[in-house]
Length: 106
Image (tube, rainbow, N blue to C red; front, side, top):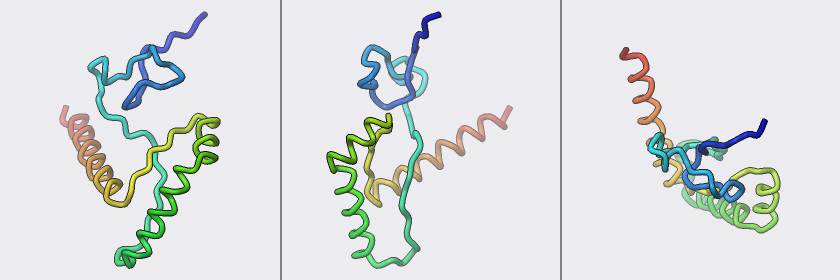
């Protein structure tokens, strides 16, 4: 039997499946948080140290070899600096709290 992909959990269509719409396009789900990896430092870490790591990770993720290795492994790259990451975590916390509240409200 042939497998037919009906939709993808992603913010945009995947280059590997350009004809397959996202679930958001189909009206089901317009957010995709995926999985993340993050470097965190203790509260109170001097800003110059934070900036050093933000810059190092940005440069690494922009490196053509890094991009190629991720693409070959089928992994997406979506760099977020410390402020963008904090905003994403806050958004995810609200989303997850709402989902759990709705599930247990019944």
